[in-house]
Length: 178
Image (cartoon, rainbow, N blue to C red; front, side, top):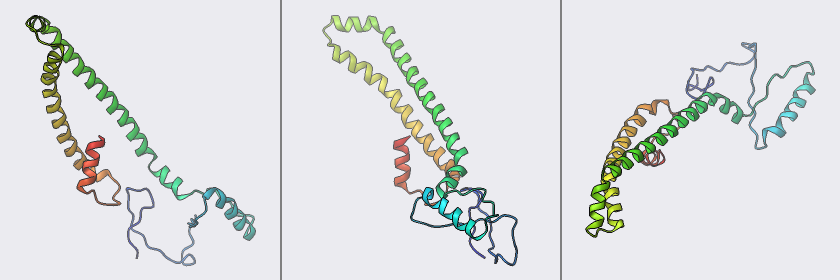
């Protein structure tokens, strides 16, 4: 008996028992070859070596481990790209919404700003006033969004490939990146 292995993908594990080849001859056979050379150079040599022993053997597919892993996560990669696109679109819409609300609030306060300018207020003071009042809801929204992202990250942690544990530093890096 051996430890559980990932033969059908990186997420699914399967219980494995290795038995001698001659005790149970399978219909299909797979070999894994470890080499320091690139697979593009190794594949033709492997074909020649197999055909020197038996020229009638059909060799349907030879893939590198990188290609195998890439194929096993292709659907996850596509879903991530689509969801990232939706996230970018949502971020753009949110930025447009914040701009629209800020522009509308400035438009409503035009008379107030005119009076402030008439009383001697500088343009930089008006700009600072508008930005300070606009920053408060933006910062509150950012804080709430980061808190919800932390909850979502913990909830989605089961979807990650369990290669190594997520430390607090990795969570912090994920917060900063997203």
